[in-house]
Image 1 (cartoon, rainbow, N blue to C red):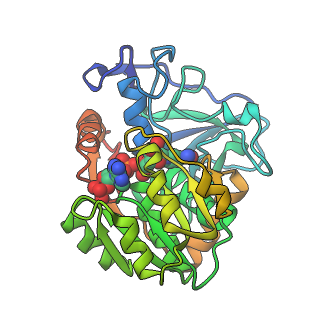
Image 2: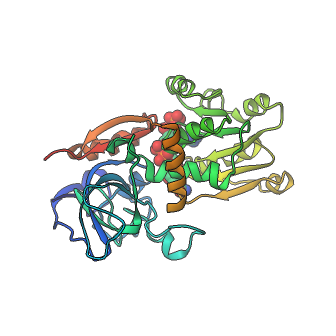
Image 3: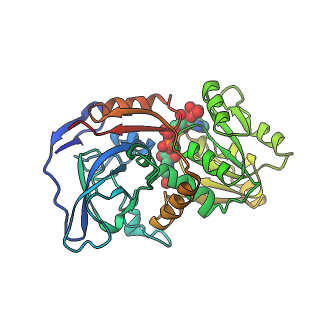
Length: 339
Ligand SMILES: NC(=O)c1ccc[n+]([C@@H]2O[C@H](COP(=O)([O-])OP(=O)(O)OC[C@H]3O[C@@H](n4cnc5c(N)ncnc54)[C@H](OP(=O)(O)O)[C@@H]3O)[C@@H](O)[C@H]2O)c1
């Protein structure tokens, strides 16, 4: 089978190799991958920013959708032909995250190779079923960013109808956050650096939009639109460079879901965090139980992921370069059909 291996950091070092066909272990299912999707983390892994001491070679990427083609002798919950997605955190099934689970994410180190290969074996418990209404390409967008947005707003954030949600930028996590917030009847204030993307945000249902480039004091606009109170939830993907503005944008007793670090560093004044009783909730994707609750809700609403662009398996390096440019709105997908 074909697989992409990274033996040195850098997109230019990503190579297709002939790899041994994986054999499913007794408790495993063998999955033929049909589609994968990119997360910002994949770019960091490939460029050596995620873990500069990562042992190489590694097969990158975590998010995929495919079909079970063989099962191990102990497998009871899965059959050949079923459409499945692997969990991003392979060993987080329910309850709180623990150390072994936190070390089981796909495509982030040499111990658990990722999905940029034609076949991969997973424990039968470490996959979930693809809802019928979704294509492989659509399903491949869900395991990381959709679940992260769901966990941030619904599981951890306990989002209620009528609350206000602030999203930053128009990457995978933020677009799912807009969609989930609208599904729950929330009011959305969304930011982007691009006026063209702002038009797309409006079409997706964002109630208020701000260009954070042309309006660098965007927290003032957020306060204006919330009667000086601030929003109930912030989906914080910017990190050090945006956190102070996020703190200024949230209401007293509000919640900031700490997810990403897309922006540059800065020091943070921690006093307003306790003086205004703000909750900072660290989010690490989500568990299998959360994923299944999300899929139930997505299926009920027939929520469709926003796919910006699709590439072929051979074009995977181009897909990563495209992500690096930051022009995408939503998800970038790689389709494997080349046989
Ligand atoms: N904690 C977790 O479990 C978890 C899970 C998934 C992702 N993440 C993290 O969350 C972040 C987003 O991931 P992703 O996959 O959604 O990324 P992505 O799809 O690559 O998002 C890129 C977009 O983010 C926006 N952006 C960049 N810098 C920004 C800034 N300073 N302020 C506001 N928006 C900015 C831009 O939107 P515009 O072009 O519209 O400006 C850009 O197009 C990353 O840091 C990732 O590592 C964490």
